[in-house]
Amino acid sequence: RAEAAIIYNPSTGQVLWEEHSQDQRSIASITKVMTAVVFLEGSPDMSTESLIERADVRNASTTHLRAGYTVSHRDLLHLLLIASDNAAARAIARVSPLGKDGFVARMNEKAAELGLTNTRYVEPSGLMSDNVSSAYDMARLLAYAAGDNRISDVMQKQRHELSVGRRTISIRSTNQLVRTGDIDVLGGKTGFIRRAGYCLATLLRLP
Image (tube, rainbow, N blue to C red; front, side):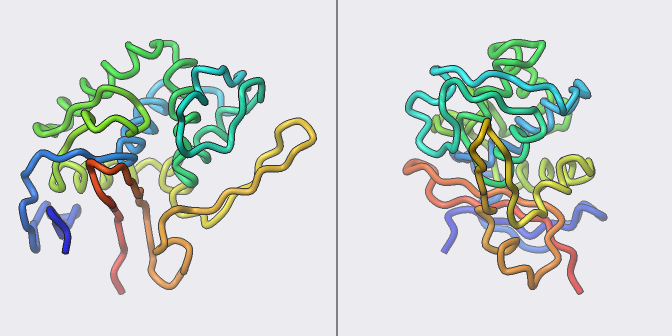
């Protein structure tokens, strides 16, 4: 029932099946795959802690964070990719050495470097429908991102816990294939906003 879809073998580059896979569409939180790629490009110290600001959580829709929390970069990455936390995405871009605007510019530069010709980003979370791509581009991006163990190891986790002061926050994967655990998932990201509908990009190892 998908409006656009693809089955793609990243080992060979072969498209096994597709339907409207080159159509440019809003991608919602699949945006966060590129957010993770650009974040880790600079080899950040994952133990560094950053303060969450009000702008990070304002109208964030999906978030476990509150202004005033101090969160490690490692936990921000887990919130980004496991819980699809929008405030975490904003915080990652804001604390980047590139700054928020520079971070988004780098997301677009990276898309161009990877040959993702239908992909454009305007912010790092996916809340805005102006973040667009195609099924083909997202298949290639996910395969690229999952080649980084720092990303794939997080994407494969069913759950994660982080401590914020005296509070413990438990998060669960938004990817049902990861949560059931009966398929070998190497990476994946879900997304939803009204304009995009329900989105899924997942890299699987077949039996």
